[in-house]
Image 1: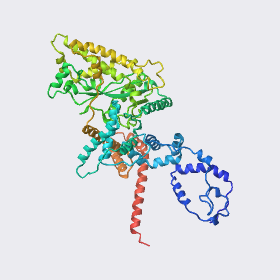
Image 2: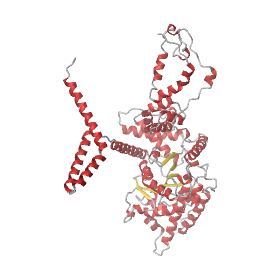
Image 3: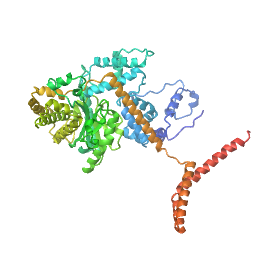
Image 4: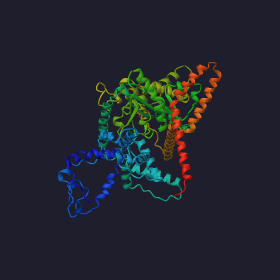
Length: 623
């Protein structure tokens, strides 16, 4: 092979980067793999004796050493960037939204080849997300199937729930729960499944890596990771608020809490009597309440979940007239489907109306905890609502709803309930506190709950954002949670002792801090199955919608449409006594539909050509 010496090398070198970018942009990134293969081929020095382009050739002449990069160049090499799943999903979404690889690369600060590789591995990324991998995970590991994989997913749900309740975890507690869940799933798998699971320290380390649990506080470990993660999140959040120009009225936080709506303080005669009545479980009955508010102090209507779809107490009462949004679930817990329902069918319209009344754009930033009942795709549910998740184990530090407003809300509820009890027993009806308590139903609870949420002041709502935002809150006083709750508890104790219940402030505080019992293995499995069923239903609905959107012209469809049009015009012609008028209308109708007629004629032509080609292939004898 002989290569003519090349001139103007400087100009050629200048355009190399542009050429490479264009090649990658049009999908020729695989050329790099071909170049790698060529590097192993040595054609011999004799083919290159007359070339002056040796400095950029793919190989060096035989017998000569390859040039190596200088130490200075190696030292200045850019560090390898770690890209998490969340970033990869955003890049894929931008590409599918119509952005070119070049634009994405420029905006993200990544190379064209990196973007192309991520797009090439799109299926692997989506599988990793569906496999419950953390969006902060940086490695796509193979997802195992069977009881061990199922156990890890259930274990993650349990850990998220315990973390949200601020229950401290230890490695011993987590491994014990893992063994318990695996034993249940192995039993369900049958005798053919003979794999053993010991929850070894190696498994625990890999499990933490797989689910990016480095920021989850475990007893005995340093809590610095929580504070550091919170600080980093606040910086990122502030940057987002500035870049997107969000107003205080557009920034919301939501969180759910459990409320034992009919429970009395431990030690009271009512509580003891309730426990002694066979099958009477009212003191254990709970509801889940989702509450939310924005930085400006606007409070969203509470979203209540109870186990009964149509309670007897709602007889002759329309659920739409309740002071809350009411939904039902047999376990009274928040699921991803219910959260989706709350956001799309309740809060989206409420917030849009609020924005319209305040003359601000309907552009919302929703900050929520990464809880089991919050769908990871919540940010894609509504085009005007962007969702941001708090990092794991930081909600107690920086989530607004965890800064005392829920504690105050529960205390107000208890105060309102006791005030009602006093009023009911002083009406001269002879009703006792026990009778009032037995008659107290879910409708009474909802009215008191809405009343209590109304008692939460605007100053309180403003104050809870003090630890979350770096702007808008400089004039806020903050919310003195302990002082406010202590003041309410003191009033509740005074009212309770009107009935000689013998309770003190510690009893009331213990009741307010009561959390639901830990989920059993069966309940965890039920919740996971509900989530899977909801996800399948969502995918089927999405697939159905996409199928409906796939529209295309066909010869048959266009032919039938024009035939129907002719029949319709014929009917008008038979009724219209004015022939000139009908002719004008007929001409205008055909003129308006002329574009469709052109498409029909073109498709008919293509069909005839295809038929003729097939016919010729059949009749043409072989050569």
